[in-house]
Length: 110
Length: 111
Image (cartoon, rainbow over all chains, first blue to last red; front, side, top):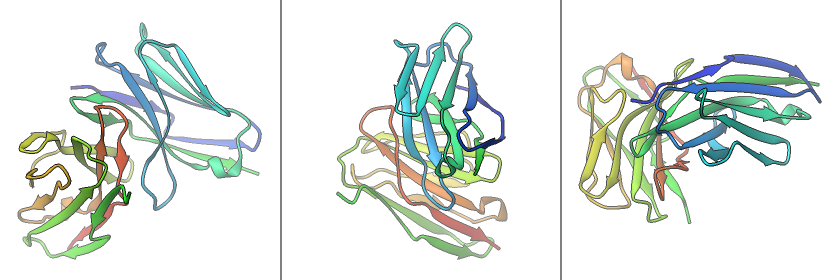
């Protein structure tokens, strides 16, 4: 099955700085890569996703890049704000569900 | 639409007890899944279903049973609860095999 590795496990940045989280996957046939944000005590929520036919996708301050050759994809958050503090998960397809990375705890300090 | 709903929100069990975690969705999604979340372990897939009457195992299926008799409901059964099953359980549904919509979760403690 698909194996998803996520790094780093924790990340601390100052407000206004950029944050980058990276994930690698093992199944070269995977074609869909979502990112979820989970605030404390809440459910995971999709923030952005990318399909294998594009290399980059942006949505305001967040972007995802995909390198199919190297089998890795990354989440980029620019101009970070304290409300970006949360746990972020990457994922890749596993049958008709998802395999998730172990998460990155992002802390944005004012 | 209520989206994905889960009951109960909290549950405490004793070792050996059985219970069913309920999950329902009103979005007419064919795909439904159960995940458990433990600190530092991310979300791990327990079981999933691609439609009524069709289920399959995920990464950590042992100790759990599922069935899918209707499109709307996907209950998760713990046959004989163990302390290792203490976790937060999330149900999710999707229209196709990509974007997952999560329920609010059930926090289960097994003593």
